[in-house]
Image 1 (tube, rainbow, N blue to C red):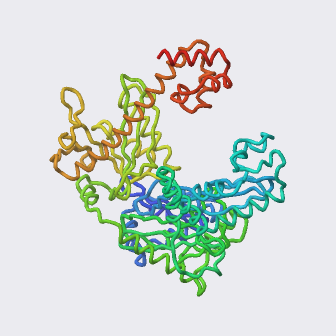
Image 2 (image 1 turned 90 degrees about the vertical axis):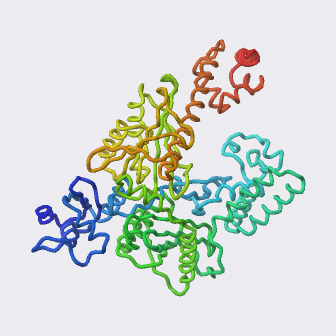
Image 3 (image 1 turned 45 degrees about the horizontal axis):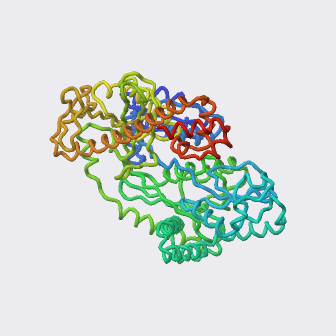
Length: 599
């Protein structure tokens, strides 16, 4: 490694440290590879530098090999580093798992009769005005505005040239028939825009509606309004901070609590908090603020996100602050400043820090994860786990499932289904895991994969992970077999757990009352449930397709047309004669009605 260090170029780039087993330890970026990497070491004798943080000192002590990539400029180095960390999850880097994009409400003022809509990326157009971002509640805000203000309700309305049902019920003033001028409509848009930032008014409107529905015993409708109120309220950090002078600011604050960190984001628009969100980072080692600030800001603005603020405000200074300013200014083609707090906005930083403390107080210590790490010789504590299972019936309607467990609960929004082509369980699992590994660049890898299977499946998963280059531990849990069938009786199954050790693959049988085994069984059973549920749905859909094709005159093209219009086979069954006749023809409509009536 020393020869590689001495021959490094004085150019910007990204460097990677590996341990003696070829595992990736750390990814870093540099304006000068030569100067940056040399700063980690002392020569004569060759050893780690004395001024390193404990985390980096430990990493350098384990490093046995160095690789590097030269890039054209410093900005490319920062972006490439962030991409590699997300994709490969190096052991000593901080991984901020915040893959979601935030919704914005926007309006295209180039249109004669524009609508308010939701987007998560930059919309093409010269005169697009954005509002947000919203951590949640954007759809609730928009739905309320459309109920209160008679804007054009659908994109197709203007093209229709004829007033529709929305006009008849007073929800639209029919600009399609010229019943409102552009100037009058513009006033409605301005009124709607004011409501976006006036959450007190929105909540007042919704509370009145909810009370009215409850008084009329319309409890289902009242519950829907209640959910909207909660969505709008939960998006805000409420405070008494005077923000009149703050205008439009994106705020990022990082607080460290032992091996955990909290990232707080607050979005202020026109002097009001329009949204807030947070991340909890569970680190294997004590995290460093500087790296987290860089990760959090770069990650938030790395997607095709509109930049709608005047400045970025951070709670602390950090090493790459000016570097990030250059990257973001280049990306958005405007001067962007990342500022430290002053007397006018310090209260906002204090508010964020108070909320970070409250969030960490509500975090429960999970010693079970530490015990699992030790028992199964894992590289890291499995804060995030992905669990895989497959399901089929005699090779038919083969599907795979991935469920996700993170921060003490199942994260259902990250669950995934897969249609599989494999003919046997091994090839099906191979396809399932390979497809997931190929998506690491879009969705960061977890700490642990838990596979439903035995020694062969564990070996397979290890090969796929090694090929990806990512740092992910693997366990396999094998069901007890009774008369050649899997036995899943809750709390009774004598499952074996396969894991990797220095001696290769080992297996362990734990007591059925062991909490570590019960935890893994619970994860495996959730993946199995999810796979079975999707398999049954897929099988029903396939059976219905076959059934529909039996109808005289209904080919694949007509079946596709029916599905595109009605959305599901159940809706086709419920469709009336006139709907079917309009979509197809009278003869086909009659055949479909007759077929389902006979069935």
